[in-house]
Length: 401
Image (cartoon, rainbow, N blue to C red):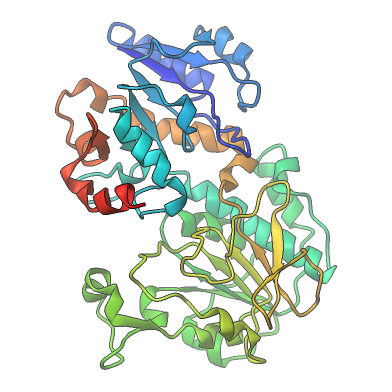
């Protein structure tokens, strides 16, 4: 079985790789009687072609001889090879309109799509993700943005740091007034966010204290869904009911937007769940948030100020409080600065790729040896020109005009 690592084709370019050279070398030594590995030549990948060659991995211009193809981001339509098995983040399972043509092309070309986002263990927990690195880079960028907005300090961009050690050294330059920081998300992304907050030695406080007490130093609170969602009919909250029927709830987040100056958002959002706030809410004199780092980058999602993804080259845009329209970054003291990069781990591509490869080594490579692997079956969105049973809900979406 030939396994190929594709060249990332999405623009802006993504430097990450599913496996490092050393990981492929190790896999080749371990599974050489079952798998062979090929790497499609790339000038942008964080690991050079020569690094793969030195590890004994064949680098090719034509990857079409491979049976199974691993990438990271969405594959451009014209680069999809018919009747292959692909692993990548397709960003289609939430009916993302901007990838409707991609899913249609996958069906037309009879591709088996296995989406990393739905690779889960028997307990339903995701097993392959870049979430921790998105959280780390997103939280760092929140403080880079705050420094630019206030001119209180100046730190390097993540992409200018060699590694995590240099990144944490940069954080020692951060000098904060006694601001309050709101964090959402307690999963992989949330844990990454917490690593940065702990490196900054910012104390964590309970949500109720965050709202009602004054602090002489910066503090943060991590909100659970129960802190800002209430059932419409009676104001109650039940976790199982919320996840089963999110449309029956409404947001009570505004009190945190009035108390906090910075929001770092890392919580998964169900499209049927309430948004944190309405775009018209930001025009209130009580709405205190001035920096929003939307690590989740759900356009049209939980945070209405995320009107588009930003880029590593241009990480921030501002939102005018009166009109809700976009302004140049840091163009106004009263506007809200939004950091919404959708490929945050690319700023630390080598380290994030190595950790991602470890997850694939543990969960996916062994599963490829199992003809009826449950974990791969559950993550198969499309096969032989059809959506699988689990993803039939996408049928109307993919074929709607």
